Image (tube, rainbow, N blue to C red):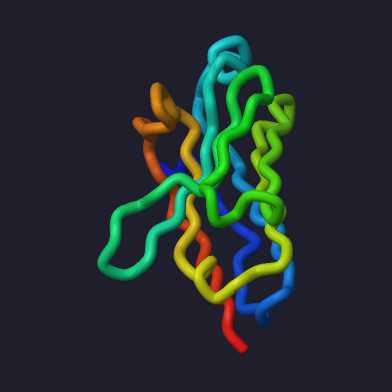
Amino acid sequence: QVQLVESGGGSVQPGGSLKLTCEVLLNLASSVYARRSLGWYRQTAGSRRELVAGIGALGGTQYMESVKGRVTVARDDPKRMMYLQMNDLKPEDTGVYYCNADVRSTWVAHGSWGQGTQVTVSA
């Protein structure tokens, strides 16, 4: 059963932009979902998934140092959607991007994962 669906990835040149979308299909009461922190994570070959951007229940955000100023995370709880706007993309942004809808202390993801969406940045 698919519970998270990521989309919006693609191949772009350095300096380009992408907007990733995460649709959360979890069967959760709205009040429960609204209290959850959400996050976008990236995985590259041979490495662990790492937080790119997270957003708390009250809208507070956390960003990976290397993406600050270039990436914006947003959530739309009534639609059960989360977004990641990425600008001025760099080759080091390449990877598979996953969203998670059960992010807890220190931005550690506990929930299930979707299939991810591939982002490739190259000249």
